[in-house]
Image (cartoon, rainbow, N blue to C red; front, side, top):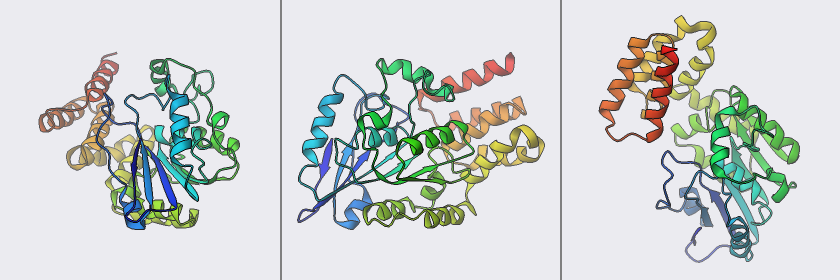
Length: 300
């Protein structure tokens, strides 16, 4: 944990649980969120060295440290994206959290509890311990919002289960926002606006949805997510868009578009992915694994 104190001190703190990173091989440098600096409040960032959903032999120590770190504040808010959203919910009681911004969090990735999320079952096995549902350790009386993309089946089902366990949370669907669902808003630099709403107790689902609508107009990410959802039924119509994203999107989007192209046109997909790798000589290890799996699926 890293505490960033506002100049002159603050009676409020926002606890930010980090999302999973492409490479999780130890801790990385962290910094104070810009919205916290702008608002003049303290910020406590919570990191983990592994993709372990903040679960380890030291989970009790983390809870105790959060309890101690937040004891002197009049108000504690929290935010978390994906894995960080789970962490924020799970430790909300220990950290005295009053309101939360959770973006595309998981309810649990244990296959026995979340059979609808097979893509994360291997990750659960690597955690190597039981995974509590967030209401078991968290504060079910939390208020706040949970943003999710209803076009992603697993994210939708996680959101519904969290909503049932935390009945004061308002679920806000951002169709084709991706994972995390705030991606389209973040692309235009407006996610700080939503975080500001959290701190100032002005979380407004209508305003958040309007931000999403505004951002999607010229969003390559939104267009790609929409095309991906339509690929099975309208492949020929969306293939040109996939080719475009594979050429000019951000690196991660180019990867996703190239993988999608492989299922339609193996030569075009291979060309796009080869170009991407040529231009990114030190890609995350997960890229090679995913490309290899996609190529094996084509050969089968």
